[in-house]
Image (tube, one colour):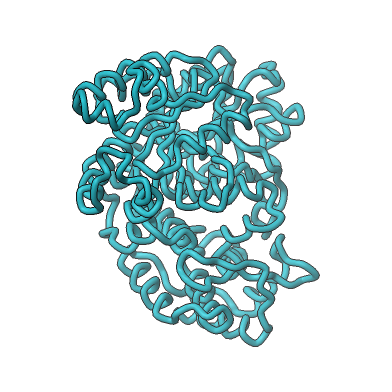
Length: 498
């Protein structure tokens, strides 16, 4: 799960996030050792942590903790659970950055308190709820600054093992570190390549056309031929650089060349960072049919550099934000709160980083639960059924993918109110969000009959019928819902009317 240059996995997070329990589960899955910094401190001190605090003070405890983490961070093939306050040490944060893949188990303060309340008297810094909440807010920025990836620990209450997200927000300059000693073939959007240059020393560079034009059999054949001519082998690696179309195409080439070579995705658009590059679905288009030819071939890494979004055109940012809104509706919780509060524009670097991580964590959780789209993964198609049909009916030219998703969300929410009991106010809230972020709420450029025919030909249809993803409430999707034809026609009409 963690290839390349990292010695170990370190789990960080607040009290009650479940680090110790999940470290054991993950170590068992990987066949690695497990370690706990609190246990290491107690072993060295010869007494439990509450007594260290009582007899020696917090400063003495932190000194012991810093030394314990220093020892543990040098271990190879180990999963290490760190105490909740370990990241308050700048030295510890530097050590984690130097060789550990650091995963934040993110949990709300309410859930954390509920989990530890019964044993609060045994935790020196959890005396009462108000102070507990203040400490949580003090540490939250440190956790996010130290983390390489985020896992929503709220979703782990059902006993599922820890699933490390595939997306690692990081600078493109880290790509050579992830490639290591392997030869790299760079498959890149030619426009992006002109802007950022080659982030790795390639054996060969394949320059892709911009957008959906990259996702054709002819382009894939050109790439296969270039890789073969230069002697790319299965032990080498493909790096896909660009927006969602570019990483779709690069991943498909990697999946099919020599029956599959490793690849790393480096998305440069918001839609790529939060959705398209995550999850292992790669593909190219057929005439009038998007992603009809493809393969499940997960990237080793998805390296999302939030700094690249500074140069993203306004329309492209908005298109990505449509997928963010979709993910927020599915995930609920903190992510939906962020989406609702997001002001028009790109936000601060810190806000973008958290937004990307939370979207990536949700999608990675869903994908890991259903990697080959046999069940739950269908929820990721919220808004996509009618949205894709509109996109196809328009010939993939006059409406961008993200805009089509935005348009498709509203009929999906309207159907959710009619069929699944969703509060109708959610549709109105999302309509206002879309308008605020300069996204369309309807598209009148196609005929309803053409949309209906495109819906029938959707690759996820069964006997010519698409099953819809709906919401019972924000954060509670249902999938596989068969909708009456009359309601579908009404929903399409609403999408085309706006």
